[in-house]
Length: 160
Image (tube, rainbow, N blue to C red; front, side, top):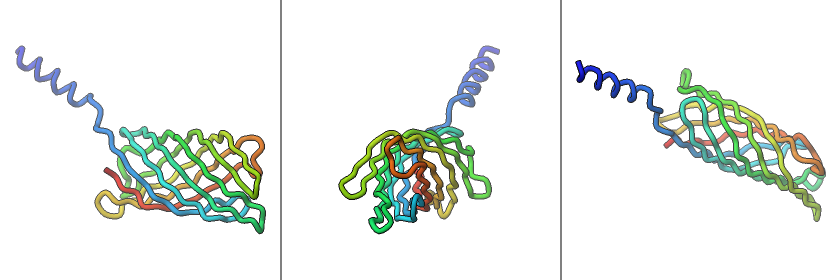
């Protein structure tokens, strides 16, 4: 009877323990659409535990001097809420976090804090390789030329 009790406790602890944390990295290309479409590129590194994840991201958007659209560099720390497993090969997620941004046009520069929200899909391609599609809205701080700033991208995501 004692062995049964010990086995039950060990089994219970094993089942209750958390799944191992998984990580992923994404390299992406896209567009910042505010106030005009400009190329955006960047990288994201993240980790997750079932439903919740955390990621760091850096992106850089080119300027368009002809229309007065500034370049925009953003470093973000975000939390993710995602499905624990892909559904038909697709893992949807929602994200929110905070960013430090630098907007630059000509000799003018603005640096500040920008909360952001967004979401997207991680679509399985082969093994650990996935396509990631993401949309974000950044509420740039006071003094920014254009706020909110919208960005959409697609990138290759490697899960490890």
